[in-house]
Length: 298
Image 1 (cartoon, one colour):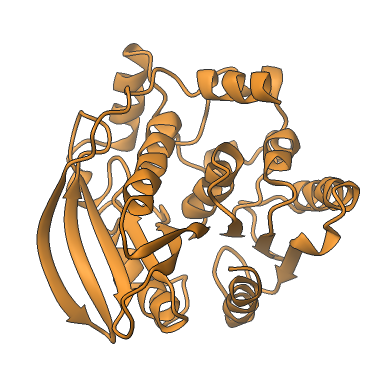
Image 2: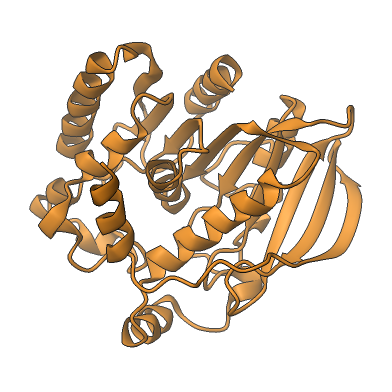
């Protein structure tokens, strides 16, 4: 297992050496019933990363933490703003308001190329990083893992109770992050159950951006093999029945394979695949389902 993890990390390109995480507090304000911190974090030694941290107004913690991963949606100006404002394909209220109302602290950063880290296109970033021996998806995952390093070092966070959630690109980040980092105890991914081989067979590659393509990945790993690293930790995967970005055959293949893996691990109830109506969107049915799942396991 360790050798596999090393190889998976190697495929993610040349990652920055971990250094001290410096923090620049920018603002703290009461926002829609929760306390919102705006920060600049040095997570990679290359560029500072804008971050939001939301906490319940009541209590001092330590709070369980949910790392929210923002979606793509072709809206590069949105980024972490989705955390506090939602998006047209997400339910209201926002994830920041919903998660803090449930008693969790929650955090979100702008990923590479989005919002305050914008100014260069996704294709420009991918090309530049490839020339430098880096992989954009690896750099995005690096920032997310370093964000966990920072959050776990805070006195108001319970580092033993960490979950992650996201939609679309954010959902891919959720299950990849959980596969690479065992600190993530609970995983929820929305409209992100994409099996690579099924996507190729369905000729669906161009439905997705460039950000998540890892050179050489399929020589060594299937999507199922990566996701099996999360077993036996609790995971809910929600997909829309008419979501062409998540080919139905791949959703079924992963559901069956993970069902077997969780059964062999003696925790079949920890794997909860849910198919709802709709397309590439978070439905109200999904919102109710994941709230119940987090409440049960985090």
